[in-house]
Amino acid sequence: MKAHSTKKKRWILCVVLAALVVLAVAVYGIVRLVTHSFIQSEIQTRESWEIDTGDLAEREAAQQVTVYTDPVEASIEISQIIPDEYEDEGFTYYDEEVQDRLASTLLQLTQEGNYTLEAPLAILNPFGTGSNGLYLYFGTDNPTQVTYTVQAEGYPDYVATANNAGEDGYSRVQEFLLIGLVPGEENTVTLQAVNRQGRERTATFTIAMPEPVSGYDVTLETVDGDSSQALSDGLYYAMGLGGQYGYTFFFDNDGVMRYEMVLEGYHSDRFLWDEDGSLITCVGSNKVARLNRFGQVTQVFDLGQYELHHDINWGPEGTILALATDTQGETVEDQVLQIDLESGQVTHVVDFTQVFQSYVDITRPVQATDPFGLWSEGEWDWLHLNSIQYDERDNSIIVSSRETSTIIKCALGEEPHILWMAGNPDFWEDTEFSTYSLEAEGDFPYQYGQHDVELMTTAEVDALGFAQAEEGQLYLRVYDNNYYAMSSRDDFQVEVPEDVGTANMEDGVNSHVYYYLVDENAGTFTLVDTFDLPYSSLVSNAQWRGDSYTVNNGVHQCFEEYDLEGNLIRQYKYTCTANGYRVMKDDFAGFWFLQL
Image (cartoon, rainbow, N blue to C red; front, side):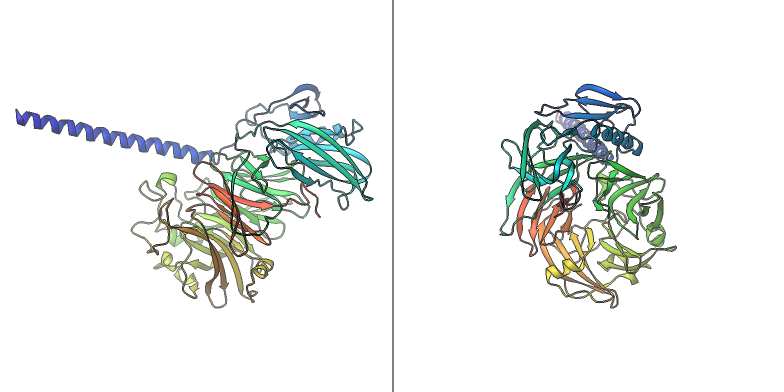
């Protein structure tokens, strides 16, 4: 009887263990499926533009555009201009032909009436690239500047002087995109027109704005720091918040959303300002576009078989550089493209699998048991580039490799080649590239898993009180994530100090802003200064703003503004899935607002 009982218990135990194994496999499978779906959402193209139209007013047959009135409740007449095919499969606002039709319709509307300060032409999001921008057009008897105040119950007032493209901001024609309306609230807008003699006229209207298309929070929680320094002027713009791909959010100093930019997909990565005042940024996983101050897309650059990842930046004169993945290749996140802004031509300029060919041979695709296995299983992510800077002194690029925790300088040209590498040399030991590792001068911890490596300007170096770089020297500002993980090599690990993070989230660990001085003549690099940040194992960035820094800690899901000594002025907490890629700040003077 006891033997039978024992056998039964063993059988039950085996069944339970088998069930647990099946459950574990099922849970892992579900997690992998969810994770894969989340990652794929980053590169997906928007399927719907979710436009709530007002009442049909007229159809511009020649332009295939329909004009609607009263899309929202307001005390003045508000109109919409919508392409007829906006509900068709494959439609996108990021199409030059669509934008030209909208621009022609808008021009026609400006010529149809005698618009005044009290009764302006008001078009909600005329070019479809934002959800809460209001285009205003009206005339004034004398050249005037227009300042507007936006008020909404429960929110701080928002005041801005519009960019009307007039000399010193004075013009008889007022044409601008009003930024600052609070989504989901009734806004009271006061327009103040002042001429050169100081004479003033005002007009007020109300407008009930729709909720954000994304559904994202309109306000962020803020925490003030110990610094007594005032926040810089401008708007923070948050790019690539997990679960909110296809949007860039703009927040004021109080953490209130003042604009929601609607992309075709992906995330903006970086804003580049051209000499004509236009904005160049990523708008889809394989699209870069130029936009003017009204939100009109005036130029689209299609990257074909290449997908964007992590960064774009200025390149040789008249071009920009983009980090990319060749979707027809075996590896990922290891290519560099050059886009000619005049011709639109896209050129493949660096294939790092060729530059590091013998090193690639000792790497392999990410496996399920690797640190990045959950996110990147099956991808051959051997380098994982995440930022790019162009050095015009020697026609080279400085790129950041997360997988090897190395900053790499590479010469451009017919045969791209390595000039130097900064980081822990152990990553390159016993490879032909070990000779390119700069020698660390002084005793300091190397950066690990770094993001956002930036060439520092002379002005930033001066502001920090550093000695100016001599010929053959340069300063780098680095977001040191201080996170080590290797997911591309067998039987290889680097020994790191105890205060370096090895988990996605970890107590007692900090990320840092690092300032490196690189001496290319001596073949050395040294840590000149640093300050601590909340720990963010992945993504993140640090941006110099003249007398402050804007810093995003993506995994920690917060961004901050710090003074130049690294003291916190204010922190903003946001919510997202997994992490938020970048947050930067700009005053948008000369674009949306008057250049003082």
